[in-house]
Image (cartoon, rainbow, N blue to C red; front, side, top):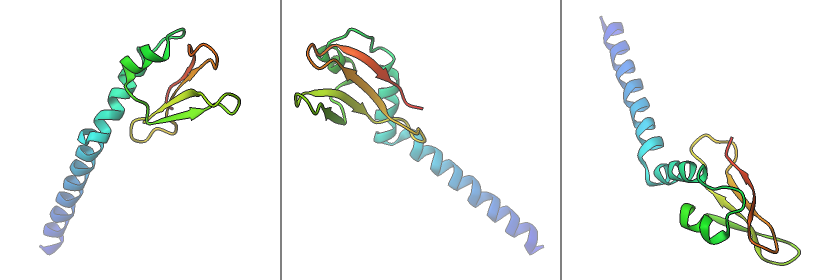
Length: 105
């Protein structure tokens, strides 16, 4: 009798933990921001200026600087939960035009 009750309690705990994990991964501010980054990154096209990218994506989480001219040449945006890499938008040093986008994996 206790065995069946214990199984039900363990199953209930597993369901509650799975639901809590789903809510945390999907609905926290960080998760909403990273999901927005994914949607917006698909709108970024080669040849756009930094100003156009900032209008679409917003301020980057990190600006990576070029060693040669100390200008921001790559913007990094937070990826969704579980992604192995982030969203990178690379600019040409002199013109500030997008020459490469690296989406998360």
